[in-house]
Every structure is written in structure tokens, then in C-alpha cells.
Length: 229
Ligand code: 5RP
Image 1 (cartoon, rainbow, N blue to C red):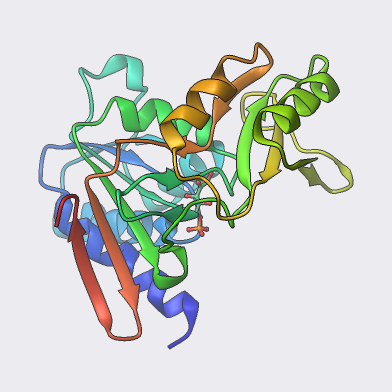
Image 2: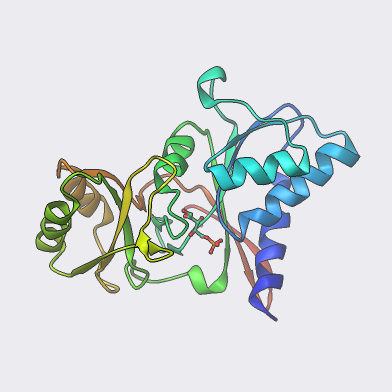
């Protein structure tokens, strides 16, 4: 089965976690895109009544296109659920996110949500985090110094992410440093804390103790994995 079909299966299955009247965090990426498309269909054609909070400009634009009513997180008392993709998840449901450079807003929205549902295909399941380069959002000011500090903390190479030949700018105007740690991140909470102690680090793409459910699509079907199973 091709990856796009798996992404669609996981993305659509996640809509089962959305009920009428909910405030819903809308993640970013090519898997959760299918959740957003399906939620748009449910809103437009099945009378589903929800308010969405997007985690990126790209997701805001897509949600507007498909007709999901949106609000600012600040104007809501909180979110019932966030549905988002991931780059990796380990057996404890710790995540690496930020492949789409939206990690800061994704984390703010996830922390405001009662529940986090992650949509993924089988390539995202790992024993140890880190084969996917760890995205770290850093300030443009003296980014070279921050990059060197990250290299020293992690003991690995760090590359600055580019877009169209220029240093990538996130929706928040920052840069992304990708840390090539390899599958070595056995203590993601300690790593996150050490990186966050660097002044130039805005946010780290380790999402620790946030994910409650993974909807995992593989060639043998869609499995719903609950934390602690
Ligand atoms: C964006 C993210 C994405 O959710 C993550 O990169 C997964 O994306 P995709 O579903 O396209 O593989 O964290 O910042």
C-alpha cells in the first residue's frame, strides 16, 4: 500500500475523536491534512459544529478553504483535542515533531488541549528517537552561536534548514536548526531541558508526555494505540 493511502487512512480515522461542540487543535503536515479535509466535509455536509485552532499559516489557509470555523486560542477557554502528525514516536509516545517547521505553535496548541491524538503511518514508529533530525527553533540573532552550543550539548552535527536557498523562516520569524543525533535520544525530557536552557533556543521539537493516542496506519490496517497499552 502506498504511503499516501496510509496517511489518508490515519488522517480520516482521527475524526472519530471529534464530537459536536468541540474546540479542536488542527495540526500541520501531509497526514493531518486528511483530517482537516474530512473535518471540512463533516462541517459543510454533515452539520458538525466545531471551532478549530490552526497550528500554522498553511493549516489556517487549508481550514479556511474547506470551511472549518476558526478562532484564536486566546479567545477560547481551552481545547478538547488536538490532532497532529509526527515525525517519530517511541514506545512511551514521546515524539519528534517539526519536520514542517511548525513545532512552536504545535506545542502551544498541544499544551492547551485536554487530549493529543497523533496520526501516523508505520514509518514513524521507532524504538529510540533521533534518526529523524531533531528540529529546534532558534532566534535569528546570533544563530551561528546557538547552533554551536546545540552541537556541544548534543555532541552531533547540526544543520540550518533552508528554503529556496535561504535560511528558512518559521511562521514566527525564527530559523530551524536540525540536529543529526541519530537514534540515540533515550532521555528526551533531559535533552529538551538542556536545549531549552540555551538563550537562543525558542522551542525544541521533542513533545514529551503530551501524546495520548496514536492512530497508526500500516499495510495491515489502522490501529488505535492508547498510551500505556
Ligand atoms: C510539522 C510537523 C508534522 O506534523 C510532522 O512533520 C509530520 O508531518 P507529515 O504528516 O507530513 O509527515 O511536526 O511541524
